[in-house]
Length: 170
Image (cartoon, rainbow, N blue to C red; front, side):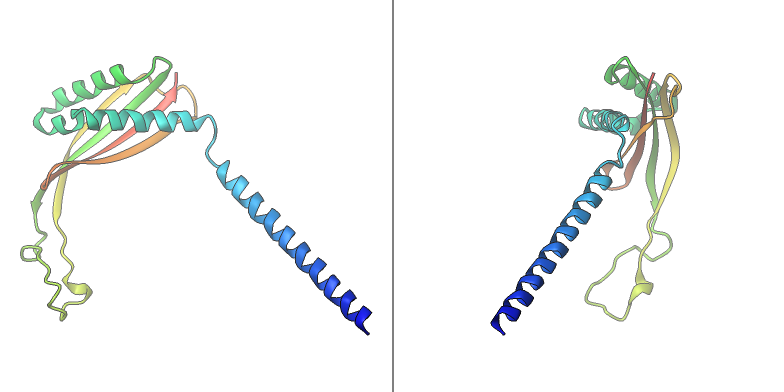
C-alpha cells in the first residue's frame, strides 16, 4: 500500500514539474517576442529623434519659439536640426504652440474638494488655442523606416508646446 502511495506522490510531483516547465517556457517565449517588437533598424532612429528633442528643450530652443515670429521659429528649428542631426540622418520637426484663452465657460475652473455635491458634472475644461505651427525639415524620407518621438514642453502656466520629431536614414 505504501508503494502505491509513493508512486502516486512521485507521479504527482513529476506532473507538477512538467506544468512548471511548460509555464516557464511559455512566459519566456512571450517576453522574448515582445522585446523584439521594436526593430533594430528603428531603435537608433527613435533614440536620435528623442535626443534631438531633449537637446532642444534643455538648451531653451523650444521655449524661445514662443517669442519669435513664424519665419524666425521655422529658421530656428531648421538651424537646430542642422546642428544636432548626424549627417546620415534626415529629420522633420513639427511644433505646435498653444496658449490659454479662457476657462471654457465653467466659471473660473476652481473645484472645491470639500463640496461633494458635484460628482463628475463639475469637471472644468480650460480652453487652449493652438494656432502657431512651426516646421523644420532636412531631406525627405528615403526609406520606410522612420523613428518618431514626441515632447510636451511648457514656458509658463498659460503656454505650452507640443513637438513631434521624425528621423530617417538618408
